[in-house]
Image 1 (cartoon, rainbow, N blue to C red):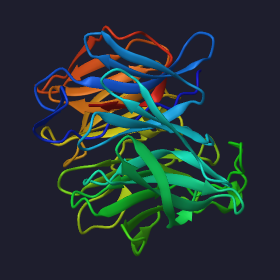
Image 2: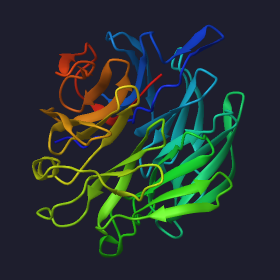
Image 3: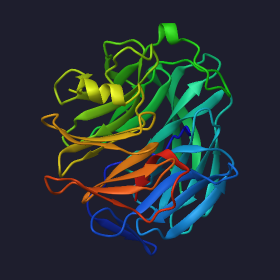
Image 4: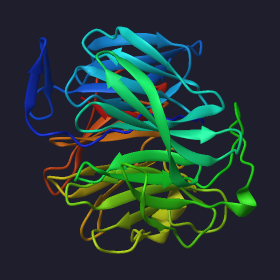
Length: 364
């Protein structure tokens, strides 16, 4: 099976802002799907497609990307390097023009995720300190025009940070510390017998608000989805024995502790110890999850935990919310749209190119 890491699709902002001929339209208009793809020869691209299959851009890049973070006011996005990449790419979403190759600092590499602050001036990227492998950092970058410059760094209060996101207040950072040490230019885990995964809430100046863990030490916290009410959902990758049951989806509701989401034993087993991408649909109160090693796609009711969909999908990759439901990409098969507005969820294939999609996506 192809190993994929595709860009996670964030929740849409309300309304539309027109800037220089570009319309940021999260509601109503045909969305622009942003992701990373390879070609048959292994070359890497940052791509933008409409859901009708029309290509807006396919920009060649030197290193594989993972997540995409969109600027809140301008038609620009950062395609963030997949761990342990050292280059991220600032791209104009209107035509795919490469505006800047953002180089990691000395003794640092990217962990695949970042966020822009709501004012558009600051960006925070998860990074590794390779002098002390796994020591989690947020690289702090300042955005000026069409350029990002490194401004400093903050501790993530943990090891191996993966995804970073915001609580709805736009000032509180949520960090999924995977808990794994890796060296420079390596994806080899150094500390599986002493992992320290954690879910951290921290202020934008770096001050720690809370740090929580799950019961299983080898359950690496990786990907996040945040609901409009502040509910946090996290997807895990279990690094322990393949036959040991693991809680691969967890939830932190406002005012409550971080805990396992109520999965059935059959669902846990079908995930094959690995989740890739998680998304929340705020209007429909649903949470969706891809499990590419198990070739399964799931949707649950966010409030009750009831299963709404458990479907086979080969090498399912990125997932993101659209008004009707969820868009899902696949590393080996066709991309799909799941319409969740009725009690019976309906699926239709999309006219996007099949296969070779990374494990996250973002809809602009």
